[in-house]
Every structure is written in structure tokens, then in C-alpha cells.
Image (cartoon, rainbow, N blue to C red; front, side):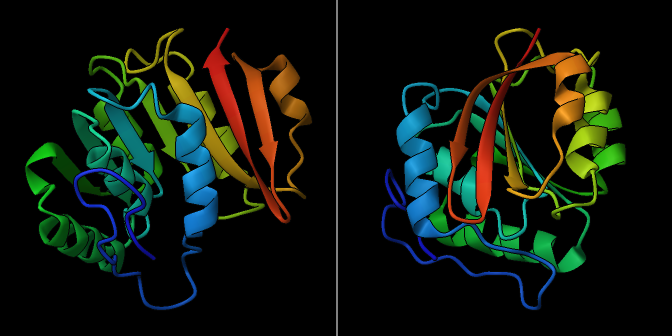
Length: 183
């Protein structure tokens, strides 16, 4: 796994040991950032369920103004900090070792994020819970782009009655990126 573009281009990233995380492949990461490249420079970025921090680090490498990394795992927080130090991006990063609920409670009154990316463990409805917690938070407004990585097996029928509208759905072999905005 490596940084695809920007100031840290081609630098290799460490991954979290074990089977608790599923690092986003370089190919999918490149596709994702090709879709959002105009929105990244200068943005406030939130990487929920960060794992190794690869998505947030890619955003910082491509010019994001600040990125908040959230992961519950101590191993993940250590890995993120190591990757940030190696890529020389640590001064534009805030790493929160916290569960998603606590982190959202802590961040909810902050100024709005421009982009929120979340890649929760599949098929546990954590994306639904996170989106519900964010639905009335000040850190999300109508302009905030929320990108959720989900398994293709995920039931998303609840989204029709949610506070969000799907603006794009990019499907891959086994997963998808949903692009959402608050209604």
C-alpha cells in the first residue's frame, strides 16, 4: 500500500497487523480520489474507521488542509501516527483513538467538514449509526460530501427515509462507495 499522488507520492504505508482492518486497495483509492480530486485541496477531511490512515493521508498528500483520523484500535492509532510521521504530514492531522460514537460526540459541534470518509466493518450497520449521529451535527452541512464504503451485500433500503440523499454510487467487485449529502 502506498500514497498515490501529491506531496507524499509513492511513499509506502504501514498497515495494521491482523485481520481487523481491510485496507482499501491502491486501485480503488486512486479511483475514489479521481472522483473527488477537485474537492480535496484545502478541505477539512474526516476519516472515520481509519485503520492505517491511508485514505486521510492520501487526502493530506493531495492538499487537504486538515484531517481528523478516528479509530477505536490502539494498534490503528499507532500505525496512523507512524504513517503520518513517515509522510511528514503529522502537523495537519489530528488522531483520535476513540470509538465512532465518542468521536462524533466530540466533533459534532465543530465547523463543518468538507469531506467525511467512513469505512466501517462490513455488515454491522455501523455506517447507519454513524450517519444517524451525524444527521443533526454542526460538523455536517448540506455541502459536506460523505463517502461510505460498504459491502455489496449491505442493505441500504433505510437510506430512502434518512436525512441523506445518494448523489453517486460507485460499485466495485465486492464493495461500493456511496456518495451522500444531507437533504
